[in-house]
Image (tube, rainbow, N blue to C red; front, side, top):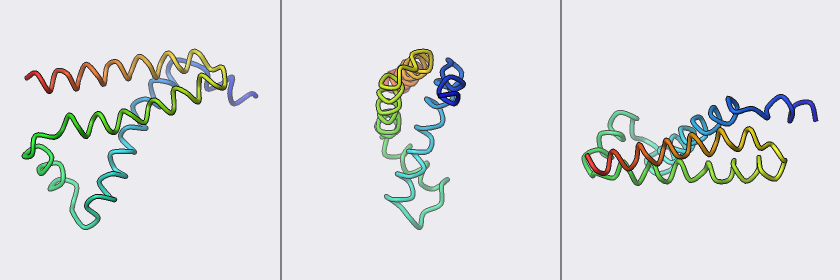
Length: 98
């Protein structure tokens, strides 16, 4: 109960909303190309013009974090996750346009 109360703030939500997609990206990298180094993998993504697809897949994990925080009635944390997810979406849109 005390931990839930301590984590129920916008900063925790924003932190989780940034860190979880980065972790998912690294997991996808390790699963899809186990022997490839990170620089070469990112270069391959940029060359194939699928960066926005990878961002979208990674940010999709925020949905699960958002639903867990809602279920636990951690609404301030949910606001932070939702806010950073909107920023991720705007970043993805900007990359796609430009």
